[in-house]
Length: 325
Image (cartoon, rainbow, N blue to C red; front, side, top):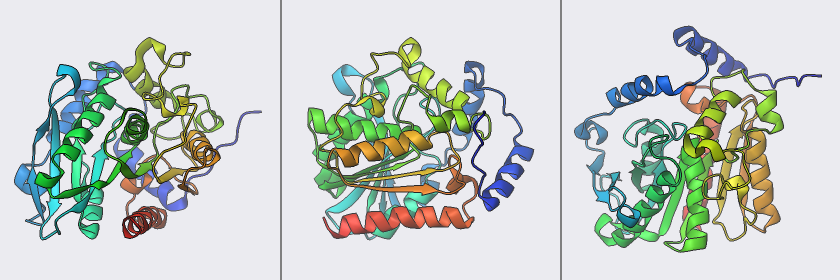
């Protein structure tokens, strides 16, 4: 019998139906759509003075050298006005399915979090697929982190208090970065805060099948994202752990981890499996599965009860992490 889908949270259902009425295009994602999506993202990039949020942040845009002669990586550095020296840093990797998004957009929530904790936000402009397939994205994330650690004094941050965070594909890169630092060296990450990350390129979990074609980011769009990143090797035996973290055979030695996901999204089961495997390896994880949540629900419906609870849980975890380290 076909799987019965998980019902959406009631407030999210209203917000989602409204969204579909305004943006009804649920056709499969294609390469032909990339130029339109990217043009819309480019149009949403704010001017540098606007990114300061009325002077609440000091903003700069340095670049980090790429690995092994790769292009420089643009960074956005936002420091709350009046923040203390040697402060923590949130190293942010944006979403967009590996093929879209920009490090200068969609930052309101993470900027509010940075301001709350007196932390510097560093947002990374990694290269996009499919023009730049794996390993361009994780190489850029890693190179940027190495540069940030080397310039910690100049940036006014404590290189021992860097938390990597990201949503969706950005969460994937955050998880891959934690594995990379563990295996290849670099600054010790204080923690990883991963929101609805894509973790498994095989795209065949029970939740991927159960929730297929029932929300905007479904199994088809998830598959397109992985295909953009990996090309023909997607789903095969040779996908490295730094591309799809679920492929890692050893999840020991990772920093304290926060994972959250909606119960009504296709990524649910791979996030659950990743948390369970970190626990099995003796690691520390706080896991939240939000009942009736869909992909990016806190962005689609920020005033919903479930969205406020999710944001509060992330900040509570971060507050505890910073207070005890």
